Image 1: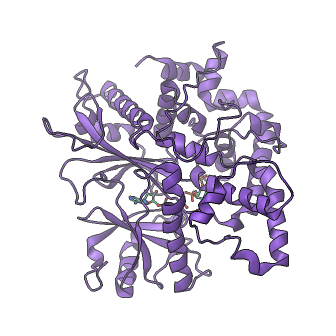
Image 2: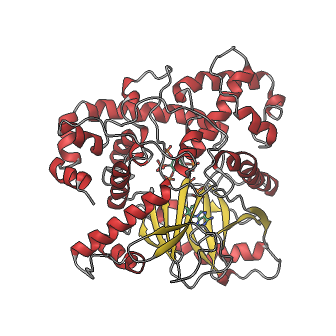
Image 3: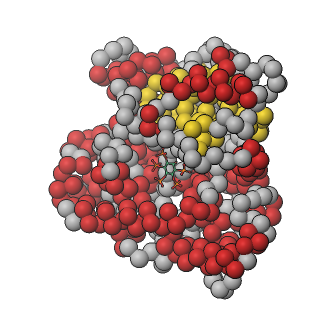
Length: 489
Ligand SMILES: O=P(O)(O)O[C@@H]1[C@@H](OP(=O)(O)O)[C@H](OP(=O)(O)O)[C@H](O)[C@H](OP(=O)(O)O)[C@H]1OP(=O)(O)O
Ligand SMILES: Nc1ncnc2c1ncn2[C@@H]1O[C@H](COP(=O)(O)OP(=O)(O)OP(=O)(O)O)[C@@H](O)[C@H]1O
């Protein structure tokens, strides 16, 4: 970023999560990502610079290898004029959702990350004049724990996302329980994937957002005021997926356009645009492949059908690679926690060792190589415990990342310029797939994870599973769902 040339009026609020806030440039396809902190927890400029550098290094040295060069965009750390950051912060404050204002944007260090704007097609340096649609999915954890360390039987049957839904609704985070189950999305079975994506469209929460030309048109900017009008969405989608059945308006048109979107996203998710390489990890899928709480498997079960087919994901696709990284959590938090305590005990005795153990970085080649040791034989050493702790942190990162799919119609007759292309009813769509929010989860969050896990399972077991029959009838109307799921499209 060139000092003196930064004008806050060229940047606009784009979005934020729990830990960072993103602004997008009006013309150029770049964003600035700033860290956020609670008001009483300010950090020094040096600490912020180090934190951001760690994020970039972790992306470069670890995630690029695991997920694939083309999917990961590490960006770079930039130093910005303090006056620019101050003015920008004032300018965007009114656009920030109230629920995110418990944390303040860091305006004191002047450091931020500069990244490509992933809501735009990746190969274009400048904003395109063609319409660009971008679907952001936060898929969450796609497997059921298989570790012997798991003490709650329920965790072998129902996935964490589905259990957590009940706690989230009870605590008022969301109003309705979603029918989305990550295991359906990660199944590789088209029917299950369609169901998962339709469920996300019905109840987006913070798992689905849709942008058109970089602007949010569907999903939550703020949990309290979600934008989720399917009819309005279908209207936005018409330039991309005008239905081949010729219907220009009405509920049938809405359904047809949404169905097109779901089919196109499924095909993109199953595509292997990263040269089909499987990534550095080879973890066999263990544990249940179906979550008992998923309305999809429940509806099949009630029709007396076998468990849904698990087609498996193509090895080169981003979902497959993300799942592989998630499965670095081999022991589950219950098996991991005693190992974390072993590391903690060691650090209490030898606090100066924290650096050597690379708890807070550097996330370099040495750090990466240690992650590849998948042995689960505990020899009682701190080294073993540390490897499992670091693998767990990486797995948790992959359980919380988001996938961005950008789509843009190809001009008639134009070559695709080596960009991958997917056919749709209206035209061919050039697409790019990227992954974002790959910040390594902090070591300090492990005790929180342990407590939260137990809270999620206890709440689900006590209140939901005990009243299973009632829940089944309120969670979804079976006949309606079966038609939705099994209707051949
Ligand atoms: O624990 P979870 O599964 O609720 O995930 C948290 C997310 O909630 P979600 O369930 O996706 O709505 C949560 O997302 P929201 O703030 O709810 O949008 C964060 O992503 C959080 O990560 P971090 O603490 O900011 O690094 C996430 O925490 P981590 O568990 O990934 O550390
Ligand atoms: N490179 C990018 N291009 C376009 N949009 C982006 C980019 N990075 C982030 N965003 C948008 O900003 C939002 C917040 O970013 P991000 O997920 O990194 O925040 P976070 O605070 O780290 O998230 P979390 O709540 O998971 O901790 C994303 O959901 C996405 O919509």
